[in-house]
Image (cartoon, rainbow, N blue to C red; front, side, top):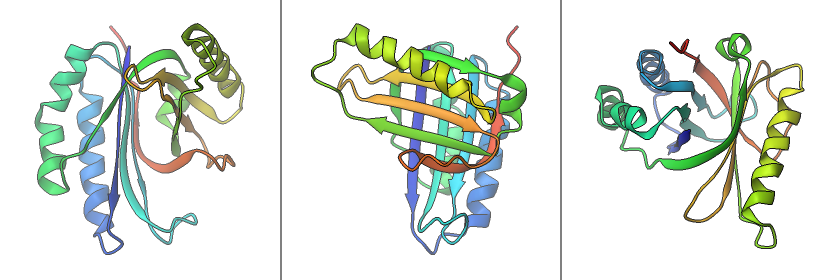
Length: 186
């Protein structure tokens, strides 16, 4: 499995109604994407929910890179590039993913947390810690998705989470979910 994420920081004077429309179209395209395990499209809007800046985010988990690449190189991402800007995405090797599909489809918020490598920790210990972290996250009543991964180039860690309700976590970057997708696997 692989995770693909990006966050676009937007100027304060951005037409957020247009960004929401682009986000909804991106979410519709995610729903039709082969190989997607879970996808979240979110925004931050200055002046709403205590946000001081605008942002647009895609957080996604894929079964394999070929299916993910088909999405990235397809019409949905071309639309984001045409209507907003070209996103600079990050790829993450997934070490653990847990999901409650029913809750995910109703998620109101998504989170992205990126942390630096702990140089004293072995890779095996990092993966064990991430698997435990995902399990603990899913024990929460509002948790819908807990994905943990590593960047194989830098060994930075990523957490992608989704919740029903805004979490109280002050360290995670939280976005209001415009669309949460968890296609049925066939």
